[in-house]
Length: 242
Image 1 (cartoon, one colour):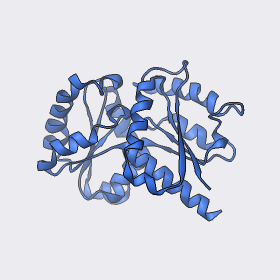
Image 2 (cartoon, rainbow, N blue to C red):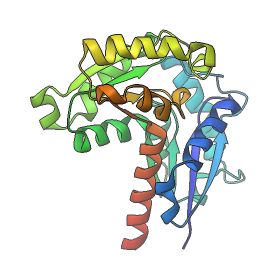
Image 3 (tube, one colour):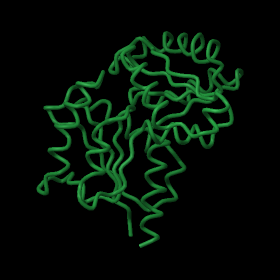
């Protein structure tokens, strides 16, 4: 059986969906699995970018109306797994998981922090978009997603803002400023060995950043790659157990 998977960009910006799709398509690790993946961009009622709790709630409502409609090509029951491609504790994850006979549903934040907590062997932090996300992400990580040994060893170092809006992250003119913030804050001040790119707007930048910071031994984690790998693994395992 070929797994049917859906990646949902809960905002209405098609360019971000296209960036997410490029990251998935470029990852060689996925090619050993039998799957088909589709991509959904939030409908016109969803905000063009998610910059805080109000936009998260609005995007959840707009997307859930499509995903729960049996007439929709994106009806949740058509898929074995759904990935909500927003780096937050997005309410759409819980809303989808609560639907009858829901498939595997994952978000980028929980998948990334779980990976960093279990697989990373050193301090890790997040670089995000606008400053409003710093406290939101810190609270979510600290209250919900930290494994015990990470807390005990002090490996979680916190969230840093790039001081850019979501849709500005892929602008080449801003790349140098992003690098400067990461170097000064995530690496020098927080001492991070791993940096999670905490917004889907960063998708595709991890290779450039890994090369730039190779001499410092810093590894950049793309939540899209990690989240999709977690979705594939979870959906495949459940399929094999049936």
